[in-house]
Image (cartoon, rainbow, N blue to C red; front, side, top):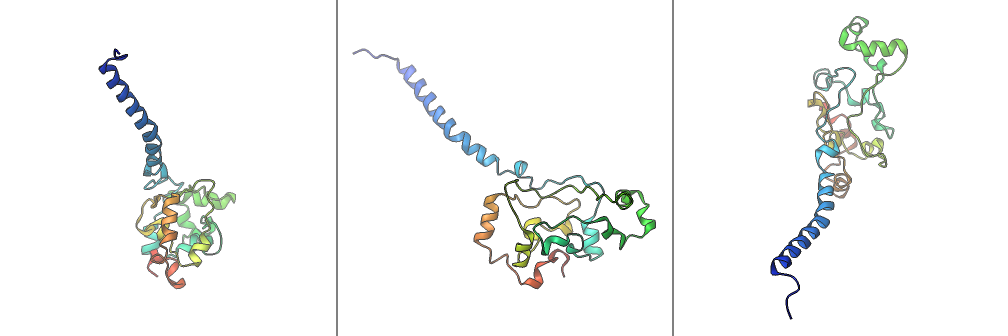
Length: 188
């Protein structure tokens, strides 16, 4: 019986089938890999803040505890953002009149908080409780990195489910005594 298709057509069909199978399998794999890149997760991304706040200056030079500004980290789900009144305790009224601190002065006068921008982001469906982690010996730098060295602050970890699960599976190296948990970035 005579061949229905030429050998050349058979080769083309094989190539098309192989490319089609590779596309069907490769596209989802490529999308899964891309979803874990720093571009998508926000890792190493910094955000413009309403005023330039130097964590290295305040944490290293001034030795201010992380929980002074982020008071909820040890007792609430959210670490919290610093209230403008926290700045007044150190910065005198004369310093608040300076241009770099204008948003703080405006916040104090109007009673509205400074509109800080979130640096570390999680998907909407994720519930994370800071207090549970800090009370159980997980230091802030485990997720947030060495903030005392960042100017400006950036998201240090990918914050993906795989990253969180990896920590939970091998948590013993990250767990410290309760007295060493908070403010380890200020070396206290």
